Amino acid sequence: MLTEYIKFYFEKDGDIWEKIVQNRDCIETLDIIRNAVMVDGYKLIKWEEWLSEEHD
Image (cartoon, helix red, strand yellow):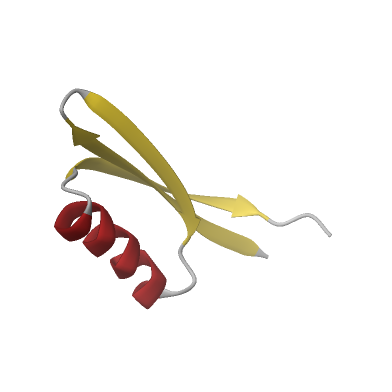
C-alpha cells in the first residue's frame, strides 16, 4: 500500500522549520499551515510530495 507524504518548509527571520506529515487528513494538513502562518508568523516557502510503500 502506498502512503503519500508532504514535507513543508517554513521560514521566519532566517529560521527554516521543516514538518513532514502523512497526507491522510486534509484538515490536519491545513491546520499545520494555518498555525504556522497565522499564529506563529512563519511563511510557507515550499513543499515536497512523495509516495512511499508501507512496510508491515
